[in-house]
Amino acid sequence: MVLRLGLPVIVLLIGTAWFAWSSYRRAVEAERIVTRLNSETKALMQEVRALEKAVAAAEQGLRTLSSHPSVPRDVALTADLTLADIRRLTEGKELDH
View 1 (tube, rainbow, N blue to C red):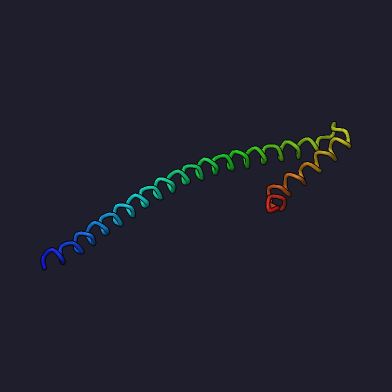
View 2: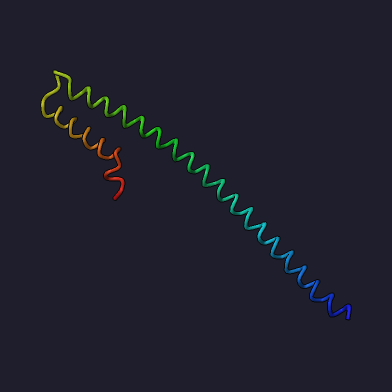
């Protein structure tokens, strides 16, 4: 009688221990992945900020170039078109496609 009750209990304990261990391993792996993704997201956000600063500087430079009296009209017009392109890109109109 003791042997009959003991074997199912031992199997149940082993199964529970295996399930707990595998759940723990999956949780550790998920935490590692989330940590890696967070660091990648942080790096991407730093790149986005750097690009935003570069775009702002380029836009300011083009605005200065297009309004300078010594710049030929066709160069000023090209600078204005480039400003419109930069604005469209930074507003996300083309990034959605």
